[in-house]
Length: 590
Ligand code: ADP
View (tube, rainbow, N blue to C red):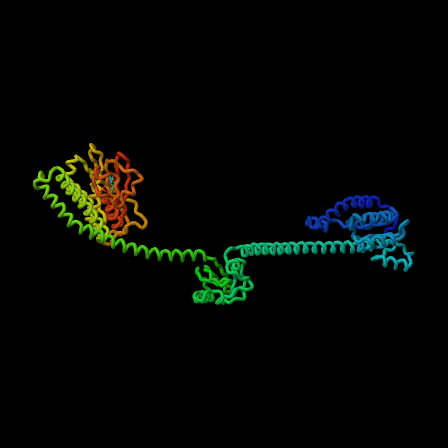
């Protein structure tokens, strides 16, 4: 390496110009480096490492400054010049320097004074200072320089290679320090990011926990955590609302003190399941309230064997349970009443049957004698006597009709009705045949839409039902109008709880057949649709339309006994349509 010796005072204007332009550059470079340090721009920090380093050269003499600049130029760094201690301080305010080359003897403020002020500033207290001085300096002066933080002395005349080597060391040192600073900064940033991440995690956990706790606290249901022996470890406020005990009281209470003695076996069984790691299905037991009363609580619980904990959910079902018990009690009462009423009904029906039956014998002799009188010489009775006898005979006839209907009603109400497959076409054709004379006399018409199909019912009773409906259809027609009846069937929608097919018919489905009997008669007002099915209910006096008021009551009773339904639709003056629903017969394919 070639060592050139340069005397201070040698002029090197190009080097000075180069170094001054570097000051400008350096100003902006330093600014960017500061931003990088704040963590806003890492690439700037790297840039700072690769960029040029500032070297401050302080001397009152321009020629010496130029000479120093020329010596340091090969280092390829920014050599910044200051012509006085004051200017040096000003430059140090704005820039960072790797090293300061300081002339000791300067007017106004010498190198030592300047160094003392530099050291006072925190930003520059550690910046290395190399004093440039002549050999003439005393050791005492040099000692003072070291006290002020001088790291070295360069004696004039300067040996350029030595100066460059010394300054180069500080440039390296500065770069390494910067590198370490940047690494420390990066480390700090990584640590900060990690710290922030952990903080965010902790915050999220806390938020979740707070939300869970809110559910726990606000839930209307009883939520609790217990151990595998059934002791409570934590409960929410609902427990106090329902059972009256505070959390501490509950924690100190053994399960057997809390549960009704009669229900405790259930608890033991559930605890055993939980101890074996199995969840328990919903169950209800009575729990003791603090006031001594018992409340029904519905429970479920799930074990967490790893934690040796059981999560418990309870709901106050006391009101529902009480209501259920009331309903049960009322049902029992109702059943008793129904039994009593059924018994009374049975007695009444028996009474009705025997009365109707027994009354017929004297009635028969009454009407027999009246008939005998009428068959004899009526002139002997005179007109009034004949009228009386006729009236007796008519009344006896009407009473017999009533008794017959009453007996029929009794039979329908009491008789057993074993179901069988009933061919409706056969039934209807028999009904029409039996009434053939009446139909001809009235010039009535009966249209049957065959096939009518089959029902699963009691044959004589079906005959009775349809017979009554046909009779009414032929009867309740305006005088002068010819009766026209239509009979057809259709499959009705099956009903829930509808007629259950008896095994006797061999049909396991719940299909239902609806039989329609339609007339073109006087019709019925809607408000009487129900009423006409009652006992002795008639809408017309018997001199207009004779009858007993029992025909439709018999129909309803009979239909219901066979598991069916009956109803009517009607339009006044246009006609009525009675319908009867009965279980469809086996393999009914209508
Ligand atoms: P009855 O026919 O002996 O009078 P029912 O019990 O058969 O008694 O009928 C009750 C009442 O319902 C009848 O008196 C009548 O007023 C009315 N009614 C029944 N069937 C019809 C019908 N097809 N058209 C109009 N009214 C009817």
